[in-house]
Length: 198
Ligand code: HEM
Image (tube, rainbow, N blue to C red; front, side, top):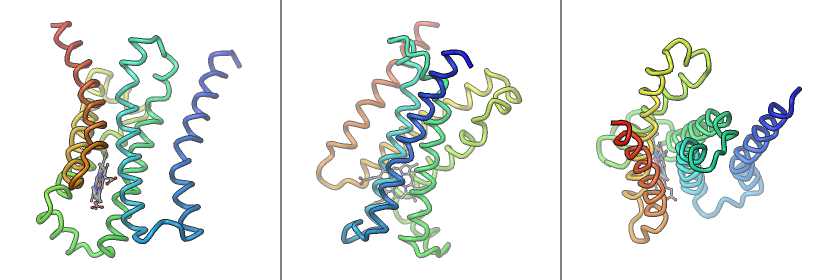
């Protein structure tokens, strides 16, 4: 095994362990009964924020690689994206089972009644093709150009996720504003590249 692959494996394990930490802490807190007065809300909110965090990390890979030469990150982008999907799925699952009691009729009514839920569902729906086409085999099957075009959907999901977050917060917009700021920087970087390439 050469040094590079040993390094890659180390980075992978680092991200694997850190990515599982929020889930492990939620399970541990649930087990000791310390998820607060409203555990469903706590889990929904935590998984939502963690999903958005991983999404932005995955989007930051290209700029960080190009600006600082962090090429090692590129090999870990898929894992970051899959963690975003994993936490978004946990978020959706907590909403379906915890918030809505698993009743499809109330979920449909909620999607129609609350715009932030509609937006959350749409953003999640856009994540599904991204997760399904994340493997090397799918990149080969679609071809790198089409795969890259499809994966620009990640920006759509992130924009949807940030707006969804901002719509929920009633008074203090600090955290959604922070996420929005980072996303604007990432989008700005990408748009500048597109513009420079003509
Ligand atoms: C799958 C469809 C989705 C549903 C049904 C949904 C539903 C919810 C609900 C019920 C809340 C809590 C609202 C409250 O406590 O008042 C919430 C919060 C949140 N969701 Fe979603 N969501 C969805 C998708 C997403 C996606 C795709 C993201 C990000 C990628 C996301 C990020 C967030 C964030 C950041 C919060 C706020 C956390 C906080 O208040 O600290 N959600 N969502």
